[in-house]
Image (cartoon, rainbow, N blue to C red; front, side, top):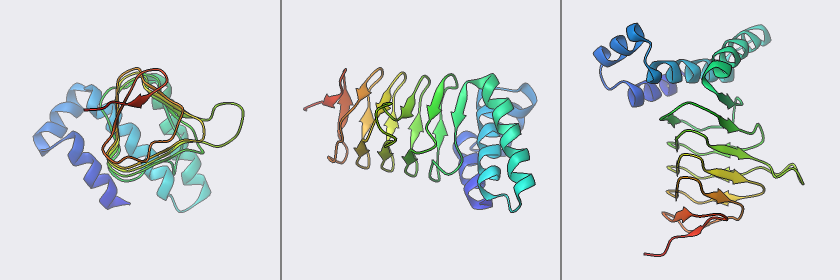
Length: 169
């Protein structure tokens, strides 16, 4: 788990100087990384007491930042550009090296408990929603404000609109 934390820390802070400046000035990227730190620690904690302690710390910070991500839902390399109302259902699965922008929501549709399964290297734009029993292939980019309600198995596709459709080149 420490290797995942080091990898994700590099996404936010390419140099040690960047880390310390962000930490001292309490910049957004430091607070988001701190949330991810607690998330990853909750996922890897060995005993129940530590799991609950890290979850509590994560939830306290998350309520201030508008982040709600359940442990075990996201693969290595999660990168959140902007905080503010990012919600990932506890039943969803997000692949490695995925990027989120603010106001994103990934969850079920309220009719069934099935939640989205998202591939690796997916970029989810600001305000995008992925709802229901949806499977997305690797490398997909989802435009700002798009509402994805159907699966897309085309790698590298760009999804836009309400409901989302593949943008043809």
